Image (cartoon, rainbow, N blue to C red; front, side, top):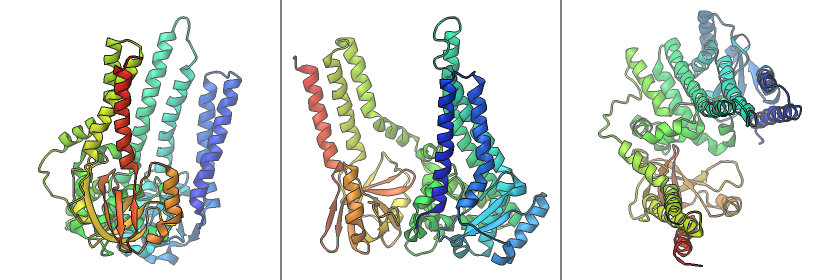
Length: 524
């Protein structure tokens, strides 16, 4: 089924993006004064703010209900919280979709809309439903619609200021000053983008705490978050999960990172506190988690569960997902090594250019040395990140508890289990597979040298493999979603699936080294 919410977001993005692009082009052609682009951009933001909720409501099939018709306990919670906080009760809607999620939208608390999916109502018990609704009410009480709209205007204004300085003052007095203003504006634009994302994450923490306070049970929200994370990862086997990425800024959880929390407990169809706490270690201890969180609208799951556990303890309750493990070591040394190997080809290329310029100047040998050292760095990088020994057999649960793993640092291993679905369920050309063993499930990342080969595999072969037992060999990574980069899959019917990105890259490494040697040392 075509997802209307995804369509609505795409339509909004295209309409406002097209309007903005054409308007800026016209202003540039007319050589409008400096203030005009800023006024125009603010006008677009205001128009989007005013029309956005109305258009979403018009396009998306939300069934509006009296909350008492859905659940009298939810209705009582909404009425109590709104009376205490002095805000009108939001319109309450239900989306007939099995994916568990909830979100709010509107202009200000007086015309807010609170929407939940049918999957959320089915998956959570009454206390957990109230906790999620209380979280969304927290966004309304805190005026998050307005706050995030105003915050989003800052990066746009800084970018326009940077663009306005380009081409101005190239000659004459003040040229250097204007260039400096442009440079500072661009740097500030990049920084402000991450500050807005930080603000988005902070608002989630405040909404979590608000839910714990008004319900008196922070454990309920913690349990709900784990179930929603599990549902986002598992219920997708029945839904088009592409929509989850599109609405991640609206929902209670970012589906891109939900799988990391859900993996270990997926096999039994329920949530295990012990394995969830093992999965939390990577979010809390690995420095890569900080890097990945910088570009996320939501905090990593473990960073929301830990304060909720602490809040539960202050309420006199034993935390469902308490995390009291002591970090035995610092993982920054591994992180720095990962960074070194990640940028080793680039460092090799830079070193080659610098050395070559000092010896030969701008000449062919300089290019050759840059190619040679970049290829040598690539060779070293691959020796580190693609250890080609799959002799150790692991299970999903043990892998999820690993902290010393990243997109660069992998664990080569073998997994045995059943193929239960695709990486993007419902997408007919999704090439990735999902393998489930006795302890959990994991995505098998199918990569080929050409995207066309991946498309053909997803279209013609992937569906036929679902339900078969198999042995998968590859490299376990986290980024922050845990996955196994597949090298080979051997199925019970004798069929084999092999990826060729690894051997092709090996060939290209040696071709690059050879080309670098020839360009550097052979005199033409």
